[in-house]
Image 1 (cartoon, rainbow, N blue to C red):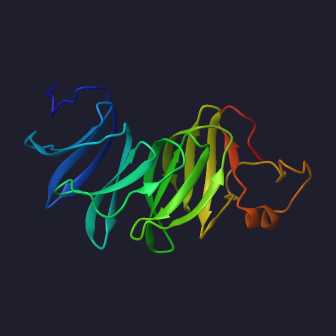
Image 2: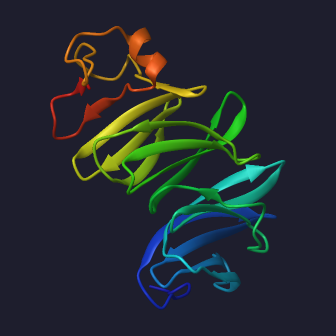
Length: 212
């Protein structure tokens, strides 16, 4: 076992990247530091300190430039992969962020984030504009991208599968699920009605799969 590098606290998130043919790993730690490492040489390329705790890191691209997106406190920060320098202003959340991932929506790179405010939000990576948000029933601790623009949100209560489309979230009809039920009114509602409100998601995991 060869140690690539170290932090002064727990490493809480990793993402793999490639820069000019070199394989890299970017790490985020409980010591409020993010570091990029050359996997072949084991050397550190850069290190950045944050005033806020770092909980998640993801890889993206802006105008063919590889970037790192970091969840730092209540902000999403975009850094240049090669230098670690910040690019633009942070994206701001109302509460602490614990998870971030990057996908593509309608041909543009999109950042998806979640955290303590019990919501999943998605942002245009190039402009920083928030495209949409959907409330879930618990704090979001992890995010992953599935097929057909589906986002999986890991929470303390289970897993929520959300399908993004434009500025709303709708269910993936190929996912397992019961008939749509509107949680506020307690009455049956159509997929189109719920999609207009952006309040549709499937519950998976330990719960009976249903649309709440």
